[in-house]
Length: 351
Ligand SMILES: Cc1cn([C@H]2C[C@H](O)[C@@H](COP(=O)(O)OP(=O)(O)O[C@H]3O[C@H](CO)[C@@H](O)[C@H](O)[C@H]3O)O2)c(=O)[nH]c1=O
Image (cartoon, rainbow, N blue to C red; front, side, top):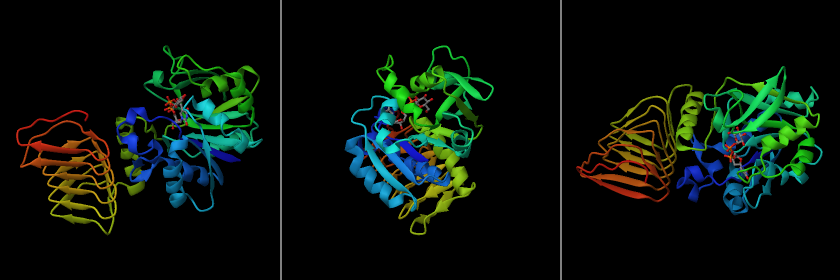
C-alpha cells in the first residue's frame, strides 16, 4: 500500500504568510503540518509516499522534507501545474500509485485518529474506499456524507442544505477504481475536479465505500483561527501539558505558563509567555505578554504593553513600541514586516 499527500493548493486564506512559505511547511507546535502527515503514514506501515506539489514549491519542500522525513520512508514529488481540484491532484499520481491501494491525506489537515481503520477497510474488508468522518457544527464548510449501516451512500461537497453533520475530514483510502471515477467526472460549479464527485461516481457504479467515525481532534490548517486551534491541541499532545524550552534559549526574569514550546536560540526577557504559545528558532521577546499565539523564525517583539492574544507573527517580523504604546487587537504579519507602535497609538486588525 502507498501513501499520497496533497500539497498543491494556493493557500490564499493564509496570505500573506503563504506568499513566502508553502502552507504545508507552516509549523504547528514547531513542526510543519506536512511532517505530521508523513509520520502518520509511516506509523501505519507505509513506506512509499507521493507528495503532490505545485512545481514552484519543489525546491523548498524537497529540501525541507529530505531533512525531516522518517528514515525508512521514500518520498516522490509529483507535480500538479495548477490547483484544479483534489481529484485532479490525485490524477497526477496515477503512474506513481499504479494498481496499488493507497491512503490519501490532504496536506493541510491534522488528524489525531490512527489511519489503521481506513487501511484495514480496503486491505482486509475488501472495500473500494473508506473515508474518515467527524461530526461537525458547520457542515456547509465540508464534504458531507450520508450513511446507511457501514457504508456511505451519498456525498455532497459543501452543501447549502446538508443532509447530515458527518464531515469528510481529509483522510481517505482507495483502491485503483478511484482513477476510473476521476476520468469520468467533470469540473464542479466552482471549476474544480471534486474528490466527492469521484467518490459519488464510485458509489453509483457499484463500489463499496465505508467510513471510520472519529471523535478525536482534527484541524484543517486553512485559516488563522484553525491554525491556532491546531497549535492548541498539538501543544497539549506533544508536551503533555508542560513546556518545552530548547537548551540554547535564554529566559530571564520571565514567567512561562504551560504549555509552551520554545525553539533553539530564542531570547525571552521580562515577559510572560503562555499558555499555548509556540516560537520557532531565533525569536526574541522583550517586555511582552503573549498567549495563544505562533511566532515564526526570528520574529522580534519588544515593549508591547497590551497583552497579545490569538496572533501569528511571520518570519523576521519586527514589532516594537516606542517608548511604551498601547495597542490592542489581533496581528497577522507576514514575513519581513516591520511595525513600530508609538505611545498612544491604537493599531489593530490585520496588516
Ligand atoms: C484544490 C486543490 C487542493 N490541493 C490540496 C491543498 C490542501 O492541502 C488540500 C485541501 O484543499 P482545499 O481546497 O483547502 O479543500 P477544502 O475546500 O478544504 O475541502 C476539502 O477538504 C475538506 C476537509 O478539510 C473536505 O471536507 C472536502 O470534502 C474537501 O473537498 O488539498 C491540491 O493539492 N490541489 C488542488 O488542486
